[in-house]
Length: 156
Image 1 (cartoon, one colour):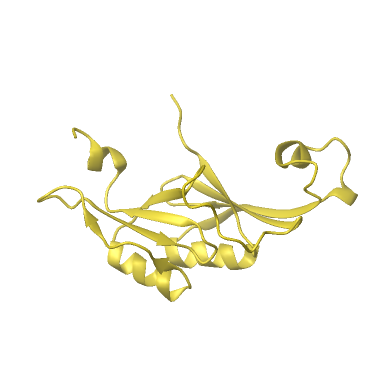
Image 2 (cartoon, rainbow, N blue to C red):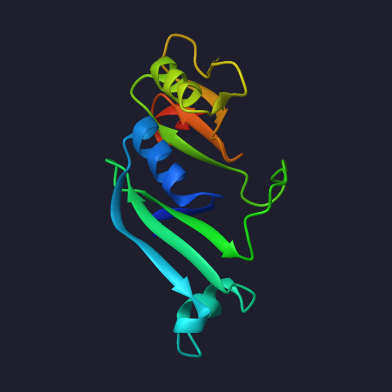
C-alpha cells in the first residue's frame, strides 16, 4: 500500500508562495523555511545528492493541509527558477485538491493572482461531483474536486 504524503513544487519566491497557498487553501507551515548554501555545507550532503550537484543555494518549506497531505515548496536561488512556461503535457502536470466550495475557492485563487483555466464540469448527473482546472500565480495547474477521487470515479 502507498499513500501520498506531499507534493514538491518549485516557485520563484518562497514567501509569496507560502502566503498564496495559506490564504487560498488554508495550508499552514509545518516545518521551515530551511536554507541550503553549498559554501556552508559538508560534502557529501543530502541536498545535492537529492537535487543535483548544480544546486548551490536553495530554500524550502513544508506546508500542510487539513487533510494531512503536504506541499513542499522550493525556491531555487542558484541556479534560479526559470521564468519560462512549464511543459503543458509532460511529467507531473497538476495536483488535485478537494475543496468545500469550488466557486468560493476559484474566487480566492483569482483574488490572489491565480486564474481559472476551465469551466466547472459535472461528472455525474444528479450527484455533486464537480471539477475545474485553475493555475497558481507560478504556473502550476491545480485541479479542484468537490469530492474525493474514490467517490467521484468509484463504480464507473
